[in-house]
Length: 174
Image (tube, rainbow, N blue to C red):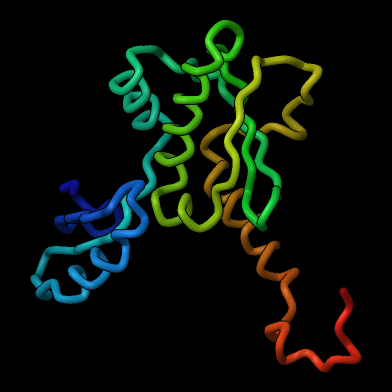
């Protein structure tokens, strides 16, 4: 659980989440449906997204290393209609495991738990290099959430209007 203030209206916010134990999500949802309506309080089943500054502090607290704020990310539609992300992080030059931990923390913190659970695919890292592509491919971290949501909408827009079983047999293509 986490407790804080809601950024939108300043009310108290209590987050109760199963974290990585997704099999417990129905239990959390059931618990929150039963929560009383209290003035000045909100209850959520998902951790809220945070700013790049806050996510940087989370990385320092969890890894003991500074992530380097020159980090950028490439988000693209990947396998299974998820959004894959590749981060350019300085740590990837000499410690790939540390860089992957930093990228995972950035991803969950910047997207927020609900967007992460719905859209995040593979998260990978690379050392900063002009050979990977400049800013036309990689974006600044504050733009990650909006980019992932836009890619998620593009995935939804590409799906058929009707479920497969409702499409006439002759119109189906394998």
